[in-house]
Length: 113
Image (cartoon, rainbow, N blue to C red; front, side, top):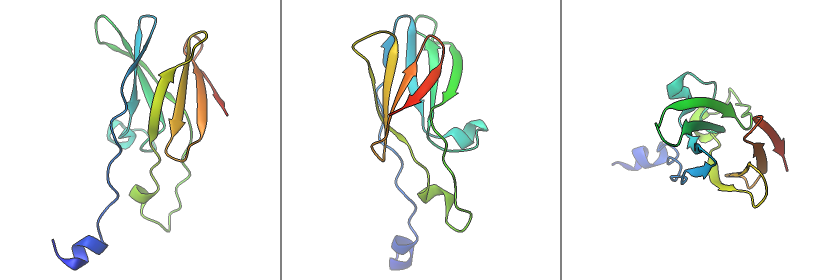
């Protein structure tokens, strides 16, 4: 790799986020949403049937507003961690900026904060 390559290096990919199981669903962070036809990389989760492994649905947790003047890959914002709440069927999510979200896994609603 040359010095120029180092200066032009892209952002490193996100770290793996362990899946979380709530009731009969397994939740996984979707890092590369654009590869799946979504509008952004990061900010999505997928729900899978715990037994069959079939993907049942996806959900956008937060929006990323891309600045067209900057490279989009340096603006991607990924889910950093997920865990089950102590109460109810709530999935707690933290993004790379430290922002927190709660997902009600029964009705698929997202609350920031």
